[in-house]
Amino acid sequence: MSQKGYTSIVVLILLIFVSSLFLGAGALVELSLRQLRRGEDQDRELRLLREKAGQVIELLLDDPTPFADSPGDPVWAGLAALSGQETQVTLRDLSSRIGPNWIRKEPLESLELLRPESSPRELQQLREDTGLHLDLEVAFSELFRGGVLETLCTPYGYFNLNVSDEFVLRRVHYLRSGDLAAAEAFHVRVQEARSAGRIIEPDGVEDFLGESYRLLFPLVNAEPVMNVYYVPERVLEGLCRHYEVPMARAERILAERRAAEWTPADLDGILGAGSGAGAASGGGASGGGAAMLRQYLGLTTWFWEIRAAAGARELTWIVARVPPAGLPPGTAAPEYRLVEERIRP
Image (cartoon, rainbow, N blue to C red; front, side, top):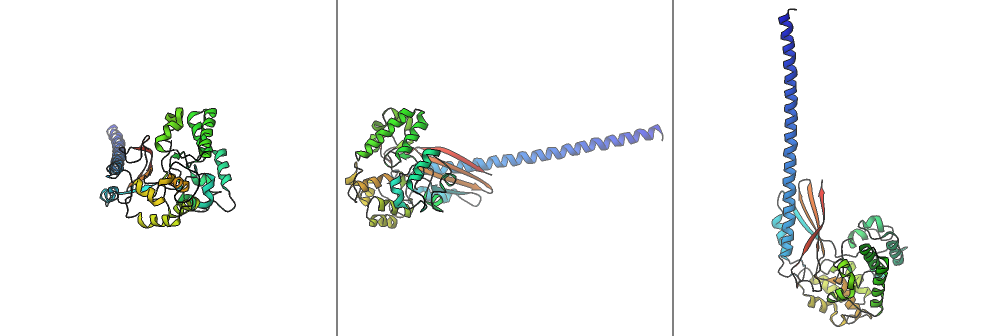
């Protein structure tokens, strides 16, 4: 083979090699550009979903009747406008159910949430041994009846001074303070108030908590824990049964709550709680039983779940409404805080 022919073969091999490099590099660049575009699309999609979720909060804030979160509020009509062919936006009350983390022993028997072989004292002891839990199924499924934790219970909510288990309140104090002696002193104050038949009102929380107020509020407060518009029927009836409030009042709530917009005074009248305010002892519709029931049933939803979905991507926000310091709900501008965000996939 001539030197010229040899040189031509070498040049050809080099050209093929260099061409393959360029082709490979071109494929790599194209792949990178495709991934970049996909990443940009996903970023735009996520920004859109967050924008939609933020608009739901704006609708919640723009409520002409902030004293009540009801099915007639503008937010529900606004959800339809936010949803479309490409996106779906939903809103769900999360806190208007029983909290296994805080419920006291006494109402549990009337609510019939536990398995026949389980007892309220076992639940109380489990919380003492293992603490408070976000995953209810993992923590409490052996004690509660099948399906109850999913449909009638929630891990989201505040701790009402009047209806939360006294040992749970002690634990919450200790978790916040790290001071066991101070937590026990707080526990004693709670016991004394309950022994005296005293109901702590929202405007008395700061005085009652004293030096612990900045530490515990708003996590610990005296606001009704559930929204009467969204509380499950079985929970409503069980609480009325336990506090000896006539079942006719529960029936009225169930019959009218989809169409009514009640004020706090209206709800007091329906439950018969007005004359019982401030006293936790006794029973009957006009006594302390109704006043205690009012500690469970209010007009405010404290925790909402907002979901915005587009294609396979889904954004979930858990937002909390902050209880007003010493004021009834609706007398101050609502304030919401994002407490959890989940993105799928």
